[in-house]
Image (cartoon, rainbow, N blue to C red; front, side, top):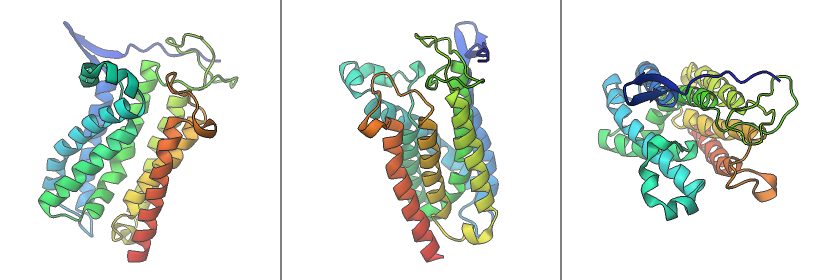
Length: 262
């Protein structure tokens, strides 16, 4: 077992205002992803312009926040927020779900592409490449906050998380997920994007991201402790795995459709 690094979740305190690492992780993911996507969108065959990607950032940010929060409320704690509806608006208290955020960004992209008369799959392919950047920073922020910890473990790198009421050595599953959903998935997306023939098949990269995330999340869930209010569900699966299954199916459909079209 190794000690959990004591990092203050508040990165910067200015009077009564505290800037948390979690908020900075969202900002870093959006800003870095935006700057990279500006270069990707104009690469041949172009799927849009850098100016359009600039405009889309606002749409994507709203989709992430609104979708991520609604996803958490509806998928993970519906009974609680049904009794406390006003707390559903208190985003600063934490509680975001990637699956909801993904749906939010998809809706935002469809509306934006319709308004700009862009091919939503081709434009979405460029956005899909940079999504793992945000996932990486988000998981690192989860680790700093000492939340979403793993299942009890006896591995040499197990940690006791400060907010764990049982104080058991556990897998640092946030770091596993940062590696799978962030680093590994980004390298796969970048490698596929670098081949021009793949960029010419609208939906291929979007499908790869959706299916790839579903697989990475499902693997990570084997090490992550399920939410206390949900526990294990169908056949010992978790909510994260159940929500990832349709993502894998949709992603495979998009991949096959793109390959046939290509």
